Image (tube, rainbow, N blue to C red; front, side, top):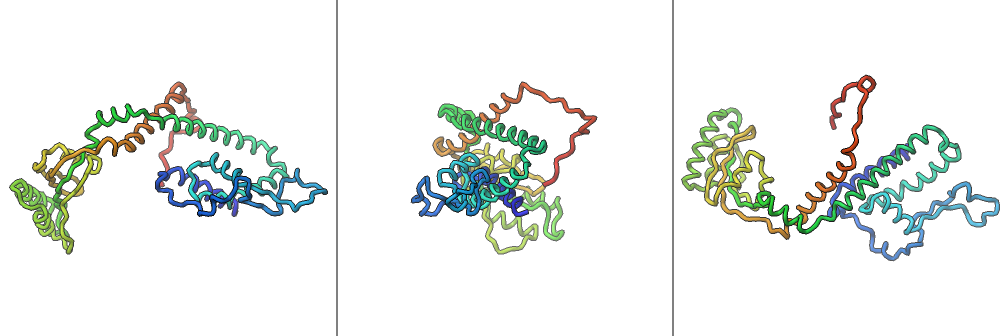
Length: 313
């Protein structure tokens, strides 16, 4: 049971390391790790060595040693970006895998048809993963020209804006004001906003009408916003000119009034990493599709039945 738990932990660790951006992997080796030589032991499994190495003339106690070079080669094959926590989990799991696998061989389990089927399927999985890894490396080589072209063609995505916003609740607290009452209040506040009244003052008025209590001072200012920072229906406020006030934008969450304060652009140099990531994913997707597109699969529905809905997480 413990080995199954370790396997689960190891798989989770590898998946988590793969999902985390490199700059978020904060677990680092201890300073002393740099002094460990490549051929120095990092794991010593005392009392264990494959049976083929055990003879009557064995002078040294039976043990299996994993050097730093061997361990790092294993990590590189499994997940090059694995953080220190993941490496520690492999260090705990790997010896037990060796011990259990050796016992399985002693019992002849590698000769069973079940093992062969699982091994063949695992080989397919690993080969597929290796292909995806190679494609991802190729896709990461994005030409600078492609980055510049994307920036120019998607300039709207890199617009920035300083905005002011009034949020008028959809309805009053504890039935103090109906949806219709709050809609009228939003229209009234909109007229006052167009006339130039202070947005903090107008936000306080909206809360008072709705009966929203609290001592927090309204903060209508939204700085350095991007289109993607706003709900799709509200993103149109980016088309306003500085000083303009939007119409009342209503949805299921409330009523919103925006004022454009100023507009700008994310510089290309600052946007390069973001664009590179978008293009890398797109290039990877197209490469994988080019491999899969020529092939189709017919599924026997008499055997499998109709597709089932995905399981809820």
